Length: 287
Image (cartoon, rainbow, N blue to C red; front, top):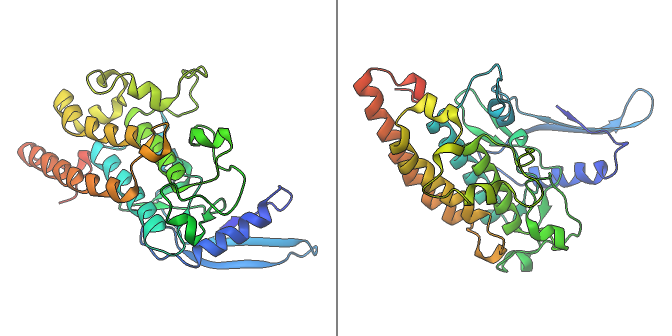
């Protein structure tokens, strides 16, 4: 259950935005709403809550934290999650009318079920696009104001640009790079002159190895071959989503089109590796 703190500015508006978004979406990789409560509590105070389906394996943020108690994600699991989120956002951008921009894509808003399938949640900051704007290359929003989380916001928002579909792509790109490196976009290594995308860009493609999350190699093996076959192509997608020029960023249709065969190749590669060793469980494959 998500209970809103109505003492915080914008919570009521966020509640109605989330309800409006959720009532129109039907996708297996988006968290489903069970019911909505809009009434008064026992003291006569306004009470608003959204009851969501139970997703058992916690948030992606929990899994990415160093030293967590739930375990670490294999390369296959990370690529599956990256694809799951892309498919959910591609649906929001391209398959409902008018489109919806989530506006707050980050690991804590990605929930994992018992099969480690990712479900996008928390539409409190979602923006419904105008029909005319959704047909533009940048898909400008009908509403003003920049919302989201520090480190995931597109740079143009800092210059007064309106919320856009391409801004959502940028946030997704940061998420992808975070999953590959294990570094948060707000880590202290960024001194204000750089960012997670710039940090990865400086090493791409030949010097990625030192910045790849050590847990990926530890769980998946393969060393440099794994990096060249899978990490480099996914990093390329992440960087293409984070270009400073919004019009040059990939869209989610292109992202999904590239990720599907890459994920299939990764599954086949590690299935072969696991079959030869007699163990597929440690790399995230269930036979």
